[in-house]
Amino acid sequence: MRIVVATPTGLVGSRVVARLHRAGVRPVLLVRDPGRLTDAVRGRSEVLAVDLLDVDSVVRATRGADALHWVAPSTGPDPLAAYDTLGSVAATAVRENGIGRVVLQSSVGAEARRGFGEIDGLGRAEEHLDATDAAVTHLRCGYFFSNLLMDLQTLRAGVVTTQLEVDRRIPWVAPDDVADVAALRLLSTGWTGRTTQGVLGPADLSAEDVAATLAELTGRPFRAEQVPDEAVAEQLRAFGMTQAQVDATVGMARGFRSAFRGEDPRDAVSTTTTTFRAWAADTLVPALGD
Image (tube, rainbow, N blue to C red; front, side, top):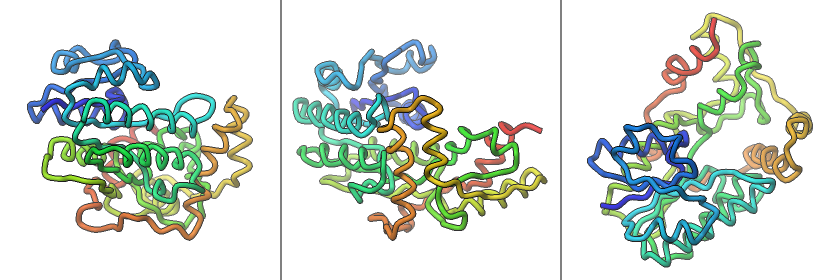
């Protein structure tokens, strides 16, 4: 089985690669800089230096593929335009090479197609792949636990920030669980057509829930605080982001504050196992330090 993995150094992609190795598969890895891969990973894989925005390179690299794991990374001054291009590149490679199965790392909210900021770009990528003849699974992932690692300074001050209402619950998921589902889909030949699969973690969580768990784990006080959209936008502009990048980032929360209901319900298939408490104890609390 020839399985191609895009972004194999990413948070999920690297874990997908490890699972494919354990299954006895020698995957084809599309990576901009092969030097970012360990010697062990390179030794068990076919490694190709590829820019995912270069359609000709991607088409060449995916010849003979049975399955493709596609991640459309947010890139460039206009994230939505980049997602659109990356979705088109993937669809072109799938058509020209007759790739039978594609697993796209998407998100809860992509089914809305508009009103979810950066996630709208994933919706466009879904549409590109849906227009091919391949069997396609869109993994509708919840909010990654690991996003908290980008705000350690605020967490060390005992504050869990959110653009949502502090008591609004949404699906949260561990990257490891997303990789599990992606690898299983890539290895399975028992599905056809266009399908979606929620990857929703074990429970919906609010910022208040997260703060309470961190307080229990650390023995320190934590509180949840809603940050206005404009305050987030001002901070992002100060970081040098373009207006399109700011709009894409801030817009995600607007969608989740709406009356949106996801296409993929929480059930035995979409509910994954890693709890926030377990992930935080293993990963976040050590990162916070004493």
